[in-house]
Image (cartoon, rainbow, N blue to C red; front, side, top):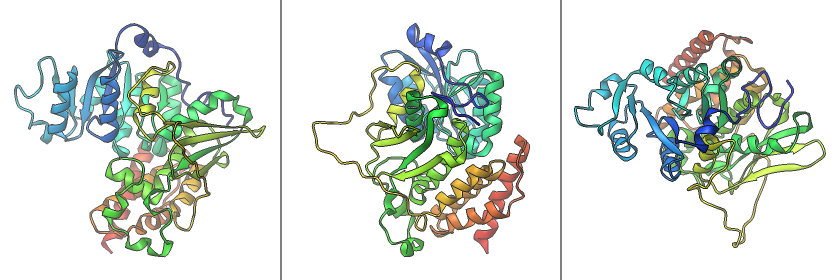
Length: 411
């Protein structure tokens, strides 16, 4: 599949372009639905909105069950709607708990309806894990521009999601710092001029730890990331480098490029967020401070650039940029990502589901750190692979993989 610039191929999601969203930035406030507003990406998105001088407006805030946090956010940004997906949690919000003018909606169906509402200009899809697929699907089906922070959507159902966006006219602009960097670097050349796409990785907290001692890693150790401040699941993914495995799969579909053109490079400083190498030997990299507010704002304001709250690099101070190939013995999850990106089909859905459950088991104390990649690899090999699955097939194998991890942990 040929890769086009500055976005995905024709068969993939159409390139973000100046449409309704861009006109809203030029005239009135761009109305944003923030899905997963109580998580780290959601909180950073609200920082961007608050600093936008009226360019962006929080129209919908959505969370699963973090009632106290989302109520506090609602009083701060005054959205039109607050959505609590968990019905039992929503009952905690009594009369007068939300500010005047803010309505409460409950359940996944209500969230689907709101992201498709004509009053919503852009959707920030930041619900963690497989749970984010449904609302992202609803937004794209309605032809919305989606600022995609939920990598699992494309990992699980990349071909289905990109075909949906192509049919509906929906747009995907990446929020992951690596994919946002690639999206920008691809503007420097045509698709047939790209030799390879390289995602950078910090290496996490165990980049130099002896591989033989990783079985003894505790959850507390895995949650101490040296560079980024993130939620517990993605922080563990960074420690195993499963996050980079999933990002390889995401890039496969987001940019419409074959798996053999994707690579990973360890860069501990997290300043070069990713790079694109062209056939003439030129390498275009995007640099910036490790601050998620920068790619979030890029996704919200695209195709324009506007001033924002993100930290800037200080070039008055000496700095160094180190790069090294990843250690596949220490980080076997990376091999699984390459394999799943190459196979396509149901491989990504099974890898993602197995990882989510294994990380949960590790954080709860029932699995070892090294068990995460081991069980993921086993299920990737053993699952009933389908090359061209339906959305129901993806969901069925997602459930199967989760059940298998639970069985494995109980043995």
